Length: 101
Image (cartoon, rainbow, N blue to C red; front, side, top):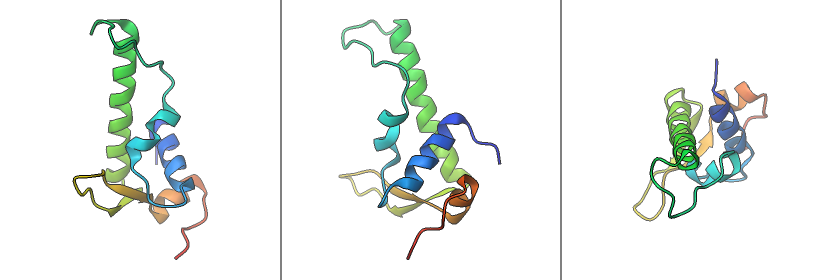
């Protein structure tokens, strides 16, 4: 199965997490684009690149769920987002050992 760079890195981080995790909480570890200045214009190239990367990470999180490589363990409750863990298929794709328990 082909994964984008973002999907693969996100799946790797989820697989390494000791407990279920919000996928969006891992975005900062994956991002390569600098965050724009708060007062930069909307069409600033740095801002545009940063938004595009953020959007790509959100699409990667959807892709992992659609491919059944992650599963929601604790649904969002209004105070926090969905918490996910890698499925056995996701771990196998990365060559990781299955989750204990």
